[in-house]
Length: 168
Image (cartoon, rainbow, N blue to C red):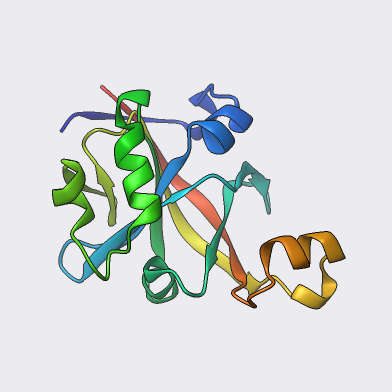
């Protein structure tokens, strides 16, 4: 594994492409205590409380939710297009039922107390700073009925980016 530490501001990607179209793996936990990754296509990158930050969303029903709740550190890993099938698998299978790394051929790696994958092009290591459930009753009716009809809401997490890495 060879990553080069960079300033988060050096990441020159279009967030609409990187998050909404390319997707990313959100991973929480450690190699020692266990970890899980899920594919995300919702989120934001910017500045919060004068620090580089990310916002990501995890449904209560997802296996990753428990890891996010227990851990302070989480990562966002952006993989090249060659790993689209791995991303699709990690988004449609639960870590409760399988070993996603073994199933996809991804190689877990630890960075700054968080888990990522050797195949990642960019890794954002984040410290959880805030978490709050999205209140269904406060959402626009079309959003509430279109995304939360079953009541399985998202918890929003704001993470301070404490380190960024680029594949060396």
